[in-house]
Amino acid sequence: MFKRSSWQHLRIPFSFFLMPVFFFALAISPNFTASSLLWTFVIIHAFLYPASNGYNSYFDKDEQSIGGLKNPPPVTSGLYWLSLTFDAVAIVLGAWKISWLFASLLLVYGLVSKAYSHPAVRLKKYPIAGWLTIGIFQGLFTFLMCYAGLNKFGWEQILQAKVLVPAALSSVLLLGSYPMTQVYQHEEDAKRGDRTLSSRLGIRGTFLFVQAVFAVSAALYAAYFIHYFSVNTACRFLACLAPVVIFFMIWFVRVWRDPRNANYVWTMWLNFISATCLNLFFIWLWLETSHVGNIF
Image 1: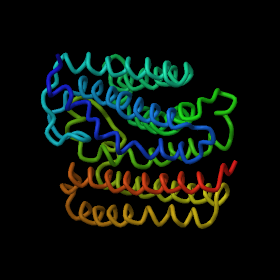
Image 2: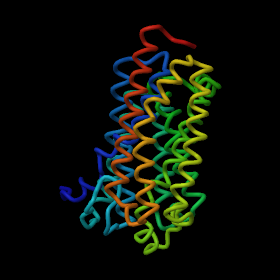
Image 3: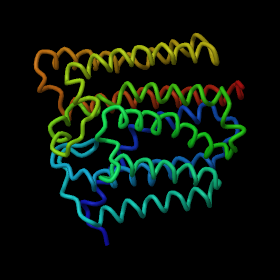
Image 4: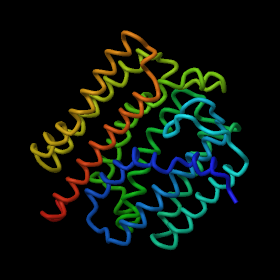
């Protein structure tokens, strides 16, 4: 029914790079069950994110490399309907398996992702609006959505400092890292009239900006872990970031010498190393807190 190229544009494996937010929410969840964990994970990573990827690809019609696809095939109308189908499945499963609140959050996420890509609104073409949209909705909003799904909580339990603080930290980290994912797409974005934050900063400016925000983000995370967990937890978190920092600095030196090194391959490697380190840390944190009980 749908062409192979449409399935490719869903970029399901790319969800791996977005998993740290889920595992962070899981690590502080006091009321999850095996069922809520499984369904929340599958709904978000196997349906919601791919739907957003496919919808974005349909309207971008990229000819050069995009996140998760080095050589994207041409898009067809089938991709549009496939992405909407995945969106609908996510919402129906969310209402059936979790709660109506969770389903409503999935719906909002889907609508915002469409506003990010659709030509009628296309938040993506505005450097600040696009940057904030991704940072807030793939960070803070997604954290709250994951927390609501995992624990089947209502707003009263969700809108508390112990949840909002780590949710906000997720956004800070994404606000620092997202321009890095755009650093090799300046030419492609310019063809569509998209003025991303990275294109405004320039290649070297993007690296300097990401360095500064990442440093602030790391410090805030360390303060959070010291306050809510322990100094040892903060040290483990910073240690997990060491491979990311080392890789980034090696790449930064290469790009400073030759901007052509700001390419798809290096970007995907940075994404992979960063996601792997963060996923491992938050899974460890989840296992650690599950042994000692709920710290809250």
